[in-house]
Each structure stands twice: as structure tokens, then as C-alpha cells.
Length: 368
Ligand code: NAD
Image 1 (cartoon, protein in one colour):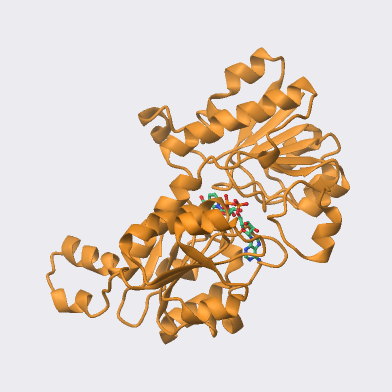
Image 2 (image 1 turned 90 degrees about the vertical axis):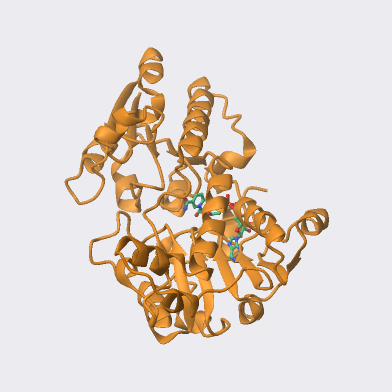
């Protein structure tokens, strides 16, 4: 069978660090093993535009593997063309780059390596909060530019201690973020999720469920977004929802770029409605050179803690999601379908998870 693997190019970096597995050169460390099983592996980074390698190669591929860091968007149009496609594997977490309803309609399975980089992302979230709240970026820029002006930075620098912090999404990453924040002595840790955590988990973390999103946003000094991108989270942080946030709050988004409306974030930062925005996810990816999130600043020249999509692709995470991808392939090759249940996003024409929305239409697809 033919397997199409879509990853980012690393060039010389692939040689510098052979454990940089998530690139076209190192192919998740899977080429020899896949070929030893008698299968064909086609690897590319060329994923966008009508005549891309993905468009050409997907036509007779049975398996597509891609990462959220350099996602091959598996649209309905591509699914329609891919007559032999049986399974899409996300080497990482977050499968919104696949049109999941279209995959279900064609009975294409969608699997991901659940949990493989949740610790990596949680660390990045806490780092981004610190970078924003402490006003690190302008301070660092001063130093490398040869300057020294304590007041210019200090006037917009605060502590995490004593703040109210809330996560939208209290799943694997949301929980890990809250746990890591507890030692900072925040005023309160809150979360909003239609699937509340078990009470003992809430107690262990020391957090409180708020059933109304706007109510939570209205009291949070720092908000972090940790839910998947799906129909009801696309464009969720728009001007209207942002208007319910506390004035001057910080917003961190490592979930997906499209959960926030690009221009509404820029506007909110400019006006001072939010004091800072940071994260690593963009819409689309790679982000074009003129994406306004690259250059946006608050009125004092800070408030931007954006990076490329790196939070979930640390060297440690790459080892875990490469291994997890191999495990999923092994199950697929065996024909048994006994995947780890938590890895299943879609199977047999149904959603295998409740994390991609609680709307009626979605529930109709969720396996009982
Ligand atoms: P998870 O499934 O463990 O948790 C997601 C939670 O979000 C679930 O509890 C779900 O009920 C909740 N949710 C869904 N829709 C919601 C909504 N409208 N409002 C509030 N909560 C909602 O997933 P996870 O492992 O915590 O990952 C979450 C997301 O983070 C992924 O889907 C992915 O988009 C993103 N992610 C990003 C990176 C990165 O490198 N930046 C890496 C991993 C995951």
C-alpha cells in the first residue's frame, strides 16, 4: 500500500539533530520499517496549491500521515479525489486539518497520538504567560539593542501571583496548565468545558468549573485556550466574546489559530482591551510574511509573545509522536482495528471522541 507522509523540511537541521524526527529528511524514523513491511512511502512538504505533491500523490494513497506543525489540509475535495484513502494519522495532537465530517461520510478513520505532546504544550503555555505578564520581550529587545531603560519595561510588568487564570478547555493540556500554575499562588484557577473534570481531579488541581464562558472571561486576568478547533470554536474569540473579557487581560492560544479572529485580536491589542496575546498557532500555517500577528503590539510596544508552531514539537515530543504513529500503523497493518481508544478521532463513520463539539449534529455522529 502507499503511504503519504507530509512533514516540514529541515535542511541542515535534520543532520544537526537526528532526533528531529518530524521533518521530511528524517521521516519520523519510519522509512526502513515501513519498507520492510512491503509498503511504499512517499514523503513531501509540498502541501498547498492545486498542483502540490499532496494533490498528486493523495490520489492513490491508502494512508496519509501529517503533523499539525506543517499540516496537509485534508479537505473534502482532496478526500473526493483520494479514492483509496482509508486512514489519516496525525503525528501529534489535533486533527482539525482533516475535514472530519467528510472523513466520516467516506468511512475514513482519523487517528492521532493523543497525549504525545500535552506536557510540551503545557510548558509552552506557562512560559508564554510569564513572557507576557513579566513583559519579557521588550526587556530582551532592549538588551540586544544595547539599551537600558528599566521604567519603560517595568510600567507594563506584573506578577502571576494573585491573578485569576482560566482555561477554555479542561482536557489533557488544560489540566496540565492549571497544575503547573498552582505553585505560582494565583488568586483562582478556573476552567470552562462542556465536559467537566471529575470532582477528584478538580480538587487535586485546585480549580473550579465555570459553566458560563462569558462569566469566566469577565473575571480572568489571564485566559488560555486549550480546546480543539471545530465548528463551534472556529472564530470563537471574536470582537463580541473579547468584549466580555476583563479590560487589560492577557490571552494565550496554543490550541489553533482559527479559534481567534485575526483582526479582532489585533484590534483588541491595539485598543488595550487585551494587554497581550501569545501562542504558537496560526491560520493558515505556515503563516504568511504579512500576517498581522507577527507585528502586532500593544500601545507600549509589547504584548506579543508569538512563535512559530513549536510548542508540541520539542525533541522529546517528536520521539513520542513518532513512536505513537508507528503503533497506529502496526494496528492498521494487522487489520485488527484495536487502536488505543484515546487515539481515535473518527472510526467506522462516527466520531470516537466527544472533544470535537457538543452540538447536536456532532452528537449524531458520536459512537455510542
Ligand atoms: P483533550 O481532548 O484532552 O481536551 C480538549 C478539551 O476541550 C475537552 O475536554 C473538550 O471537551 C474541550 N472542548 C471542546 N470544545 C470546547 C468548547 N467549545 N469550549 C470549551 N471546551 C471545549 O485535548 P488536548 O490534548 O488537551 O488538546 C487540546 C487541543 O490543543 C488540541 O485539539 C489541539 O488543537 C491543541 N494542541 C496544540 C498543540 C501545539 O503544538 N500547539 C499540541 C497539541 C494540541
